Image 1 (cartoon, helix red, strand yellow):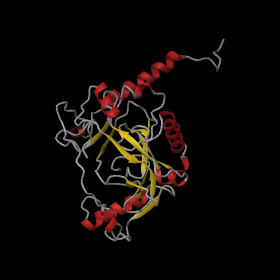
Image 2 (tube, rainbow, N blue to C red; image 1 turned 30 degrees about the vertical axis):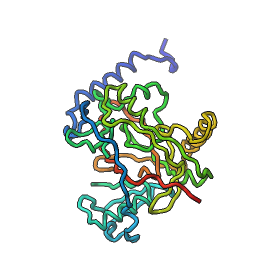
Image 3 (cartoon, rainbow, N blue to C red; image 1 turned 180 degrees about the vertical axis):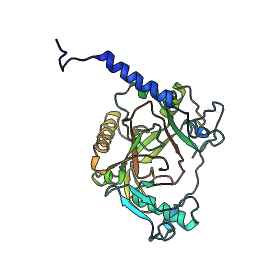
Image 4 (cartoon, rainbow, N blue to C red; image 1 turned 120 degrees about the vertical axis):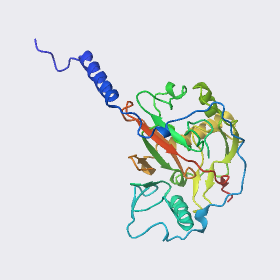
Length: 311
């Protein structure tokens, strides 16, 4: 009798999948930029981060941005709340005024993607260049798999730091998240201890002792004056002055509010040649073939201590 359309033949499916993986390995010519492979030096140490006075350069930029944008520039907004794609801008040799205008443009649009063109304490970097944070994965190297993360059903986790996995990135406007709420005056403790523990579990480095800091739950951008939520699941521990149950309940509500904000999210997709944690959070999206090579190199600058809402 002929096989039913409902019958499952797993052996054939498994063989086909394995054949596809073998084909990828056979055709793999190695990394295109081997110099940027992730590098760990377990003996490398950084001094504690020092406080300094910071003035955002966007505050004294020309609002018309004549040194950044030109007649050949194309600007396309991805959503009403955040995200802009730019073509026709040369950012490899900007003038000082152009850099100021870029800072202002970033503050206004939150996420910028330029098309065709702080040293991290635990992430892989480029040998000799510890300021670079490298995201890399292929079928033989998976440097981003945290033992803690492997025990989770979904990798989706909104946070603000250098992205640690390949694939597209979801960005969400903390400004719009704040605009739909009314929390005022509360502060929360943020901790890097768990990130350091994750690195130790994976036999990775801890170049600087982790710190805990107290920050406002709502912060103000120094240039635009916009108010934004300043919490995330990966680093925020508890709300100051609240009992544990109260803190967990309020933070849980805010995290859920952020996670459901599909209308003030955008998805950043990366192509070869494409690349403000103050007003956004982000999360990875692992919807791609994990045997494919993925690489991203990030730089994270230091800026001002979060400015609280005072009135």
